[in-house]
Length: 624
Image 1 (cartoon, rainbow, N blue to C red):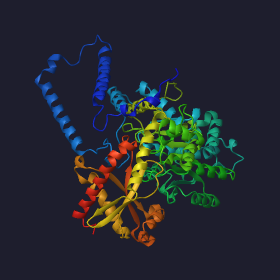
Image 2 (cartoon, rainbow, N blue to C red; image 1 turned 180 degrees about the horizontal axis):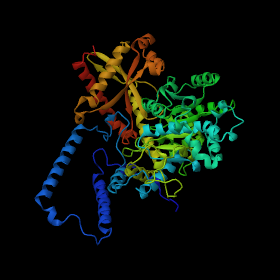
Image 3 (cartoon, rainbow, N blue to C red; image 1 turned 90 degrees about the vertical axis):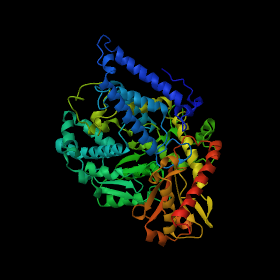
């Protein structure tokens, strides 16, 4: 049935409970409706069966004692959460980690699905949600340009998705060597170097040719523990998520085969240096197992040149060298919805401006007309797999990571079966668990993402509009903190943005004017974090909440030098200190999305910053 909904004319504000609970009554109404429907289902299932809890039992002393105990514990839970939780939903005071208010319909879907206590490992345990997860997997695959041959699923989180991607890359790279053992006649004309440089498609085609020996081949692949160390290097940028060290450990690829790629002063992979690293390894006959490009790094929000990584692969393919490309878009992946039209097609660059004007987004300081960012998102379609987390920019509850793959056959390199959950050769409407690292898992995650994708389509009419709000907030916040001045104790303190944001992450520092000591700037920036973070203790009264990070020289190299020198600080100072301390704001708030809302919050943010600096001057002996 054709979908004729006019998403463009639906108010996004209706989809959240609201910073002040503005939609609280609607939330309670819908919650009650769903609970009533669930209770009705229980009552109507074989309705002739007797009740298990009698009215007499419900008025007994023991029953009453149990109810009182339950209420007391839940009251204690509420007290602990109210006094000790991060205030994510605040409209304009939370400028910290990658968390914010979640979609009300996704919360409703999650809680409702959990009432049925399904097990998301197999169709038999969760018929409804497994079908939903299969649909969601197709949604994520198509969002990333994988079309009809793609596949995806709702992973527990981005870490599991990244581990699974390397698991697949490792296994598929080892297939040609396994075929050489089991069906040598199929590869008798190829050298080991050629076998180690077959493309993903060539390896999967080769596996298909093994016929009834396919399982024997998989048993001789990296799953057996053989040949893992000869598969080559796994290249990741210095902006990588920490999960990649876990991934090489768990998969047996090993940290010795993890190559950290240098980044430029915009915190994107330095493509020239990447090319040089590939060349050095190829010249030594060391294969490249794969390259990870990041779309939305967790510290900087940087978007790597995915298009240039793809071009490098095309270049080396002409020399008989191939490698897996994975895009870690756990944070920034939903940014692709901005470029998808209402028919879920990636828009030509020349049509963007008119389409953005039609939807009233990016009409000022439009970084998403940036050709580098556009080309990176477009090229995701040429990668082999993508990590994309609905529980980040999808605004659904944890735990809902995501993994999409370009060739659905890739998942078959992981297959393990269990008679009680899924059996080889037995057809079921949908199957997920036999291809994933997780076993039992919540059905709430699949349901919450499924609902979100049907309320907010994965294109400019739905999620594109929501993501655009956060990019507007990031641009305005970045411009505000870049060059903002405060007069404290006779000193002028200036905040400086570290770089132009690619996504909705903003990094900034505080520096005393005339003081060109990196050590002092780091100390002041760190003090700001100490006074505006969960370390403070009483979170409920914080007027500004931030997060922080460190750009360590051992990891980032000279990437921060250009910025540091622009502030009048000598490079030798950076070499001596060995790090740049920054404040970090993931600008995920959906409530600072136009000039009027920003103009309301800007003076309040500035005042909170000034009060914090005054407190630092009084208590910490840093501003002197």
